[in-house]
Image (tube, rainbow, N blue to C red; front, side, top):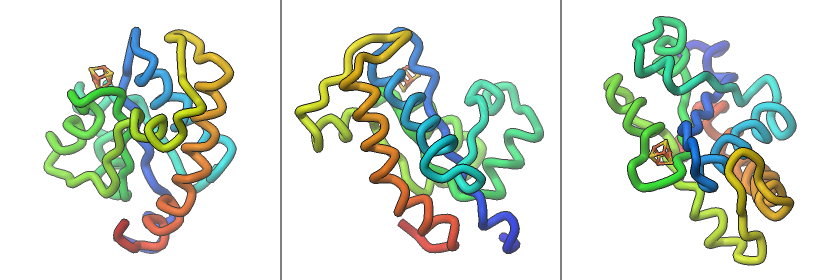
Length: 139
Ligand code: SF4
């Protein structure tokens, strides 16, 4: 991997339609990309991998990858692995709730306030992982 490529880390959230934990995955990815590590954490639409979009595949193959999945079906992780790429940091969003039981996410299209706060907390906690991966280290 060249130096320029090492500066960005792909954060891929599962689609999670109709599921609170999927909504939490999306919100956490947005928090990472837009607030916590803009310019370093980046994302793409997961279905682009499923349809073999060349640019989405290139991004995933050339950068370290964090996946955020809403349930054990692990659609984001498996979509990356289907390309023959190992995910550097696979995560299931319920683990953030397990660590922060006071923040119970609810809602689907729009998370409740506790869910939005949990996404912010999760993204803050993932900042160090993004930094390590961006520096070319393993998690
Ligand atoms: S990992 Fe679970 S919640 Fe996410 S898209 Fe797949 S089935 Fe839906």
